[in-house]
Amino acid sequence: MTKKLILLAIMSVFTLTSCDFIKGFKGNTTKEGAIFIPRGADFNQVLDSIKPYLKNVEEFKKFAESADYPATIKPGKYKILADDSSSSIIDRLQGGEQEEVKLRIKNEPTLYHMIGSVSRQVNVDSTALATSIMEWAAEKDTALNAETVKQYFIPETYFVYWSLTPEKFIERMETQYNKVWNADRLAKAKAMNMTPLEVTILASIVQLESSDHEEDQKQVARAYLNRLAIDMRLEADPTSIYAHKLENGFDQKVQRVYKKLTWSSNEYNTYRNKGLPPAPICLPNVPMIDAVLNPADHDYIYFAADPDRPGYHTFAKTFEEHKVNADKYRKWVKENNIK
Image (cartoon, rainbow, N blue to C red; front, side, top):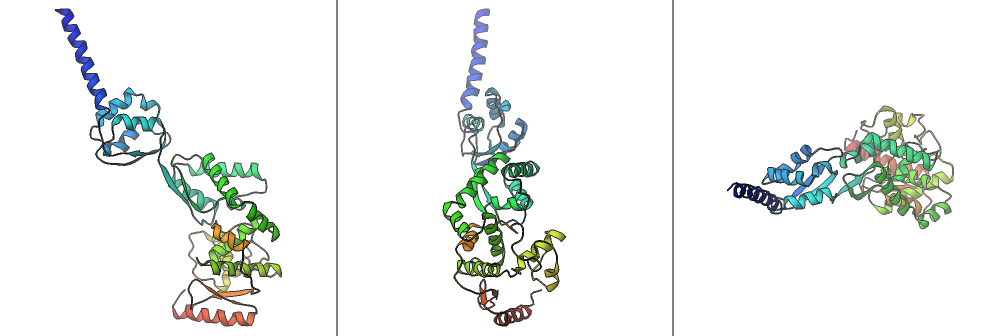
């Protein structure tokens, strides 16, 4: 009799355990979605993230513990399927089968604006990323600094893992830089007696000076190149704005460049300094780099915004012609009460 009771007890435990195990392979989610597991998260944090998707939290918890998941947590963005089983979820989490996220690099003015944007989009610490970038820059070229290193970050939409590390981020950016600066573009820059950095600097000015119209971008690029060729100051409004913001904060709003803004002795102000500024004033898009490498064919050196064609400029060879165009634009600005 005693043996039978023991056997029944063992069978009961086995049955209960088997039931729990089988449940782990049945659907346990109410909807599809995704969870984000930050670097260093513990099991309770994972549970908090996944609870809204689960039918039975305790079942998931038991299955996770039986699979030793709490000791093998991996960061990242993970997809949750509709009617997903606890087993398949744990397999996905333990295997690090992440979903990619979009990482958008925009035309940021400084390295630290770019780093801040990246750290808001993926699970990377901004301080760690800044440190890694500057260490990488020092190894690559001792002449690189926080301003000139901006040339290596190409604005684009990248698909990366949310758990992206500083090292992987730098690797991805360097790959894109080398893809952009291929043999063809390097040859064109060399033929113009310009380095990739110099092309990028001028492209950053064109980025902020022109519109989305390719024709206008190339016209503006050529006008600046013509000025450089005759040792004339660029007198580019975006450089004066950048110099002003460097000195007064990038939260400053500047809609118009008044004469006072052009007086700054800051090295980025091309109204006071000849040649290119020392570094890019933003991260320029590839089309702007191409506009500099493939500029329009003209001998204009002056240009002003065209009030009759928004997004375009009117160009001139002489200052007298330019003054007519500039006065027309200023009149339009005044009539439209643009401060």
